[in-house]
Image (cartoon, rainbow, N blue to C red; front, side, top):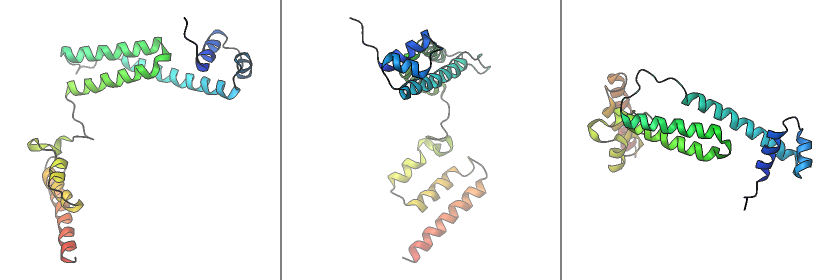
Length: 180
């Protein structure tokens, strides 16, 4: 038994077979609103643009820093396969995008790239993430910043500037406690 097509699938099928039809004609033939036809056309165009960009990215030439690691090569190949399946079957867009994201996340872990947002390398010196230490000691905002600036001094930018910033936060904490 054939699976019943959604309105979107029927609109896309009619658009593919008769691209010269207007939205009004398609709406009349399928018994849907012209607004829905316009939405489907717009979404299909956006998906097509996205697919083209992703497909172009997947087919880029390997860079000189391409790894010889078989795990990296396998992950990159899975990514390209996911993009190619997306290109061939746009109706599976969301599923393909999820596969690509999962593959890219795995590739990032394999390549051991630094993560400047979630785990900046200058905050993990000594094997302890600064935020974990601050939270474990239940430090307030000012004291947490003192620890942050002292722990990163010399690892990101000017160490004197970091130490002055730590001192600034420490002075504010001392003033707050003296005036409490």
